[in-house]
Image (cartoon, rainbow, N blue to C red; front, top):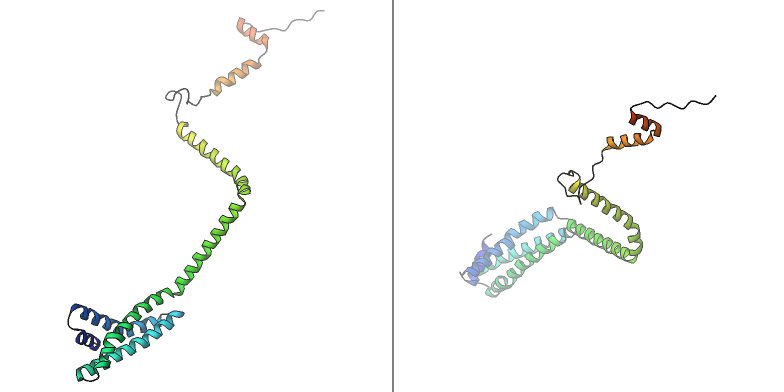
Length: 214
């Protein structure tokens, strides 16, 4: 597994950049085969094709790195070693990054959500255009309901401001008049009495009807 790390470090030196590249090759090639195999088992749709291609590519890269490291320590075919270390392995590492992005972008659930958002945007746009083209009818039909809502809000606001107050602690301009329903009923009854009853009650005598002539 560490042959690719040894190959990169041996061909590029022992500096920090070579070590980072070697670790990247280790994860992209040797561990990459296992990662893409695990991803292939749970992949759906185009994800299976991407994972399958990366399994083959990483496996070929790991085998090429193993072969190149063997040739390096055997002192043979240094040109092949240079090609694998400086070109093949970096390209395969970049391919793993690109494949990871493509794998995520081709997720069927993500594609479904994108289609649903596109449909929702289309419906909202068409609805807005229809309302704009029929603005007069829309306003005419919505105006009574809007007025009713405004009246209810105004009534609720007035009751909230003045409904619980009395004339003793509210200015005359804003006080709610208090009606004495007992006095009002007495006045109505008194108005319905006859004038004779009213006069008799004033003199303390009961009024008698006049006698007819005989």
